[in-house]
Image (tube, rainbow, N blue to C red; front, side, top):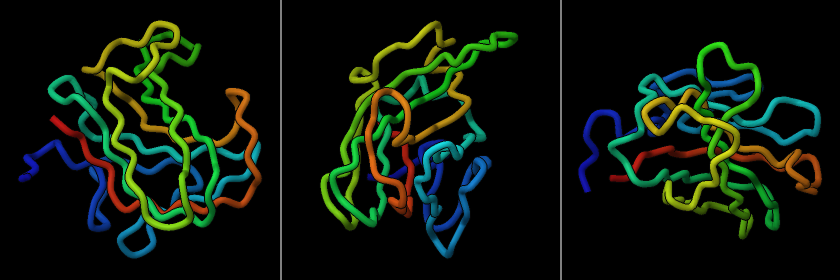
Length: 148
């Protein structure tokens, strides 16, 4: 499977976009530690148009198992303050490397997102949404890719 331009948001230590707060690049991984009340994992992709794709694939190394997460793809209208997004609730099934491949059809629509042609932020959170997780989970994101 050859990836064309735009398919890879993050891989091999290169991010096509900007990392959010508390996300650091360490070698070839984006590293983030879950702490309640601190910002979630966020990446702001350079190309916000996901409409040509059907899924997102996130490969990561987790320090612990059994975390239930929310993956939000923010699609924020201009001049709207409330958070507009698509959401899905995958689980961290084990400590170690794993991949979430989430079809866009499996994302719930929350409020009034603009659409798949304007994804401002990719967010992973273990806090809020009635999630109950222990602080300290370290996620080392190895790649974020879009799947056709």
